[in-house]
Image (cartoon, rainbow over all chains, first blue to last red; front, side):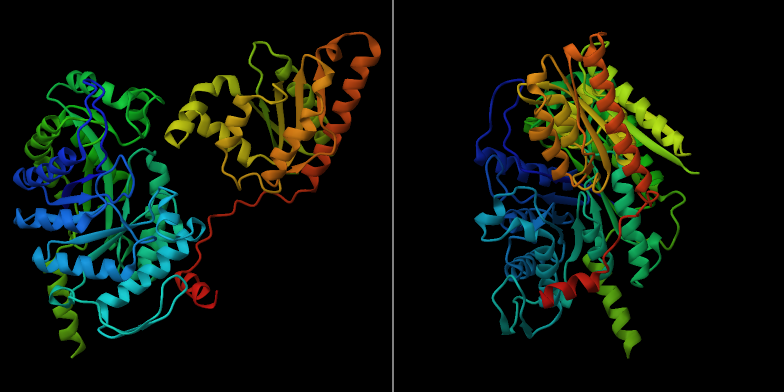
Length: 364
Length: 206
């Protein structure tokens, strides 16, 4: 099982000081947070993609390439890459290049994005969101697996004898997650390809995501990729910790109350009760995260949202220390207990290369 | 005979409220009609005042809290709905509209609805026709032809005004009961998955 963090990349005023970081500071902070993730023993760093203020990560592979050069083990991913408005040809090229530079420590999460105007800004129609996600990904999937691609679709100029370069490292494309908050069509898409399904699992009650994940697992088996239990599931989560629970609540409350996404709505207490958000001691975080398995089954990747709502870098780094020292080691041990042998580990390039070699061998 | 479910949404703000009073009278009349037709009736009343904060929270967070979730389930599972709002500033109240805004946009398709309102003066009664009826038409609900408006004066005990209100309630309740009786037993349709090959094929031929 893999553990990591995902960042939205928002530039938000710290409500306790009134200070807003510059874009430059925020970008450097994201890098510092990624490096810290590796230092404290996490497995994954994922960045969002946005094309409007107050967000900085418009160019994820540039940032991930830089982080790749300064890390050795960390898997670099996204949360999410906009499959609707990016040209699938450019996604194929960018992530294959990143794969080579990072020695395979790359995967990618497809998403449709939640900012309406991005569609017209990139020449697309938001009402075509699902068809765009389906057609663009079908092309991306083909570009990574076939050298000479003839292709014609509804949304992009046709291709004749096109070869996406560089070819994926070891002829093994990056593992793909499909992220969705509400669309069964996307769970179905992930199942069809035997790709992973990521439920962001923050902000909304678990019942909602249970339905999507159950559908994905069932359809994954339907398409012959394995049993429902072998489907590749990733979950988000959101935590704020201090050694003493009360200190965590006291410190996080102003950030919660003013958070861009849920601020000025329910109280911190109501929100922690109704959603996966945990504000408390590392022990409480461990307990709440372990309960995810009860709701969603054994899964492959847990990502936490740690750096948002204007939390200062110093605080975020302290949070990562707690996560790496007191939470993740316990989670690794506890999640391993009673985990059936046939449930796969989190996806890695090495494992995918080995699986590919094995299936080529079988084919002979 | 199977039990039919009637959900009554009341957006009155005072306690007790004339909006709730009207809602109760309509609910009783509708239940009576249904029982006379041999149906068991299960009535659930949803007081939006009790859900005011959860409704506002849902607007902010995008998901309903536990109380609101139960209320939404009661409304979307019902075989018929009585919706009653006070008229504020020439239209339904903000709280009423906010509640409607957090209902899934397809959840009331084809659902029988009786619309009703209260106000200080009868001069606002057409708000039912120019605001409430289009709102439910947008949701593709089936709205009973008679809408019931009760002004303060309608609650007077003196004969004719009250009689007129009672008559409107009876007519509207009869219409709603008939619509509910004519509706096939609500089939619990699971969210259908469109097989992926079909989604792909639709793009190729589209």
